[in-house]
Length: 308
Image (cartoon, rainbow, N blue to C red):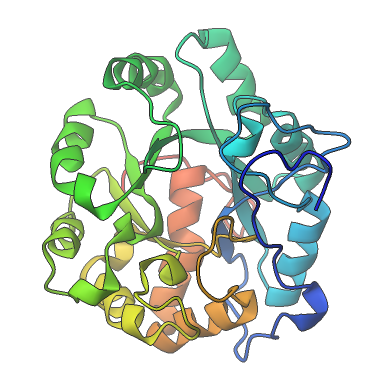
């Protein structure tokens, strides 16, 4: 653990040598739509009032993982330990040569020129936290940021606990911007597919601006034990109900994990076990990220950001 460990620490991810090789090849152009990078802290220090202190998890580490998993593209989500300082992510986007996008944390006093510069670098959305262990943003600030990013076609990335979903979803719909629910809304797998919070998520099927990330199955599991059998019915229900609105993410390097440290190769296999259909894999892993994040399509043409 590094010398900056002044707050709650996070366990490091599995070494790359221990990550399982996925048993199936993913479609060309597959995207990991939810990963983080931390540091290296000697070059990109953490903010002083951070909610947790992780080990270094560099872009080079992430790219090596993606190569092992057969993933061609990725979306880097700004973590709370770096606050509003996007230096590490911007460095990664430059190194990523167009194959990576990012979601930022944005201060309420950000200026139009700030977001235009982030957009040019590859940022495509803003994340807001509605969970107890991370800093929440006042709704008035969210409304201001919505007006700021709307001309760029960005989206809101929402990290919420399941208890907040029923009140939060109507507010998000009212903003008129695309929004993504991280980690399947962090619903409780113990409540099953008929639980109230999960029904709220499924009810977004067909909404023109709503997206859901199939990520964090370890976070919704009641046991946190691999291979997260209790969360699998929810993943399949999402695939069957709203595949056109789904993204898949690893959540590497799995900050603040409470159960078993996930094996990212196993997470790929969990997804392909539950989504064996080639056309749905293509939609969730390739086409949907192209639409939301503006990646070039496989012919090299740029896909415009639009509603699902």
